[in-house]
Image (cartoon, rainbow, N blue to C red; front, side, top):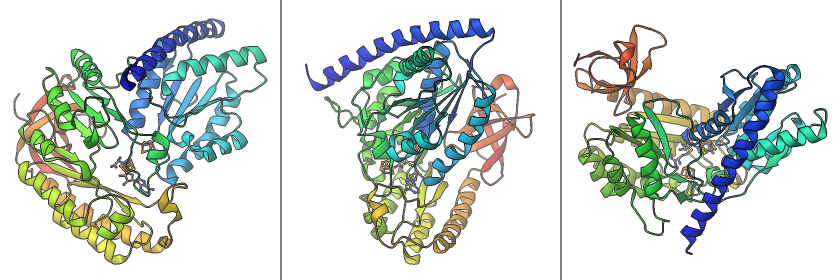
Length: 485
Ligand code: SAH
Ligand code: SF4
Ligand code: F3S
């Protein structure tokens, strides 16, 4: 048996085992519901990125399967915080909110509190919870989400055996895994769009970033598993999919029969019913001409590329271990814009990386002005213990970072506003996502390039792709009118 077959066999065994645990959990929940005379509710709160959002859909799928009812109230019978730790403020938010959960738990003795996600992969965070937040019932990590039913059964059994007074904390955190457990239940949050994991983990080790430590090594799902999932989604009415990975451009490299990301996209395009394909995130160092060509020639791949720059200074990029220069990034963006003129290029930028000077920030601003990003997330550098950058000298003083952050933000906003205006008067297709919250007479949806559009229309159109004339640019969104009714 080769390595891939071995992983598949162990993953399939896990899947079967977890279905058995789901059955067992279902029985236990049924008994609790009968004795309480009411439904048991759950609430999953997601922090962080789209990877976490997809993981929360997996937890929700399992919970609905075993008989819990979903709510968005945090005083539910089971509350799960799916945490992020990419910047320190993500951790602070979790600790802050845990206090509130403690109050809810005092009022509802049946309440269970579970913590999972990236922050739980950090031993220091788990130690702190064990010490200071002893009311937490379950802790698990990013690698064993699929085991949720099993962990819940363990928790409920311990409680039954010990009596409800003796509190126990079930903790199960894995350092890494090679398992890719397929076919467990997953919530369908929207009927018309869905995320799809194509790979897990990251091998890039950008020197500021904690993700490779908390998400493990890069592993790609097999194309046939991805295609089967997307076909099922399409049969169910999904029109738009977002392919998820920390670095989708290196998809398929570690498979026994390697497949490029561009090839995967071409296979997905053939699936009838799928009208729009998005993906997130692309690392500039791995973005191939093959991918640019695939995007340019496709009628389904959305003309939006999220291409994180991080810094415009070649010196800082090298210290960040990003493996491209300022000039290479500018050249890459220019090639993308030339091949796909109406594409929106968005980015992520970090300000205040150790050793960053005002001149480095000038370089970042120069790249923003040359590439003309359609949008950018700007972040203040956050020191993550255990990453190489945390040990670097010359951490930048806070006031300098703040001043440079404001400088960059101003340019980013001016440029992206100007870029949005270039579509005024054009017509384009919008996937209608819902009713506008501020003005209920308007529908709201997104163009392929990800710009938001609000326009008058009937709620029946939600989930449909319609043609809209972009009448007025409001900075970061458009007002429009339907033109195929
Ligand atoms: N894999 C994705 C990014 C995941 S994290 C990619 O490489 O694009 C999302 C963003 O958070 C990163 O692009 C980066 O801009 C930011 N980020 C990561 N670590 C950070 C840190 N220590 N401080 C501030 N921002 C950080
Ligand atoms: Fe972090 Fe870099 Fe990996 Fe993105 S590519 S997740 S920034 S290490
Ligand atoms: Fe945060 Fe984990 Fe995503 S650290 S950004 S939730 S991969």
